[in-house]
Image (cartoon, rainbow, N blue to C red; front, side, top):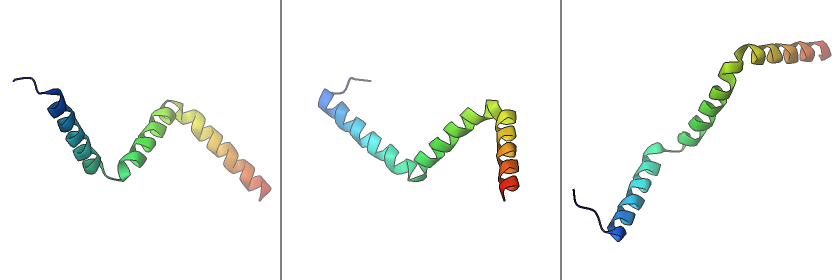
Length: 63
């Protein structure tokens, strides 16, 4: 495959980026944020549940 000219390669890269942005849609950023939270919380599942239960118990005591 012959090498592309630098100007042609830059234009192709811009077109590819535009296609990717259009294909990902609006929800892509939210999905990435949720996946990041999941990746952070998953190894701490038991600790997270204990903290949530403690907060719930505290909220019920104050109510």
